[in-house]
Image (cartoon, rainbow, N blue to C red; front, side, top):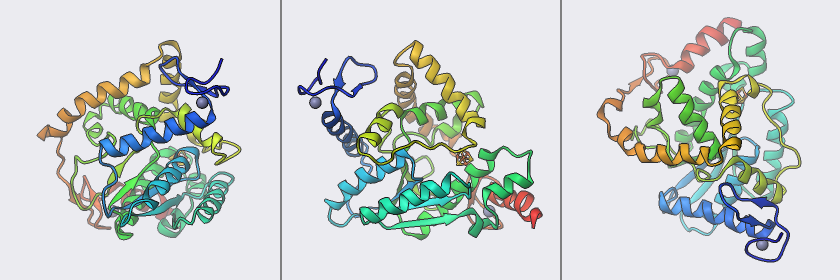
Length: 309
Ligand code: SF4
Ligand code: ZN
Ligand code: ZN
């Protein structure tokens, strides 16, 4: 068997198709698909200062590399990488070391914000002292908070994240299963239901690429030699949904793609439905946006972290 575009040996069979591509044809296909998503959904515009949320993992590294390549060619646009150090020994310290070297190599400005500096304790200590807490529930809230707050302070016009098709399909199903459909109105390749200065606009240039494609791209580009996963990932609700969708997609190919395409058809209805426009409040402690009088970050900081001191 040879590559569909040339005579080299193929390295990947594209999802939902009979097309197999070699290394260099796959890299071209991958980058073209990212640029097409950026163009169609107007993810990057003139004079944008794009923040790229990076973790040192395969998805965000692939995204950072491609966006850096694009923005270098555009006069007036800027890019800064932003990372969160949750404080997970043996995992985040390793991925942040990789990230620092990567940014150094490609001359990308990198800003890191840690739970320890902002909330007083690293995630490891918080979890040690609070055995009953689900790691991702507090971690996800703290991470979103620091990303949003610091992106505004750094003057980003948009925040790019490495979410791929698999991530989005998982989030869509999670919101259905948990009866959180109104939260899905905030999904899609570019967020916009809350067009509010308090929220940084988020863009997802890898939206139409599967996990398998992003992993293949990262390995071909030699961004990393081993794939690391957070030790708490398997415990998460998302981890179980991921296994469920993967299992279903292997039995019925096209399932993930189906979830995304049907969702994109109903997304304009969700966004336009006035009932889904939430009233936004300002947290009385930190002045960040919140759906309640006190935001979830301040609730966790007070009820979980401060009581440890
Ligand atoms: Fe945090 Fe959970 Fe992600 Fe680990 S998997 S970094 S605990 S949100
Ligand atoms: Zn080829
Ligand atoms: Zn708050």
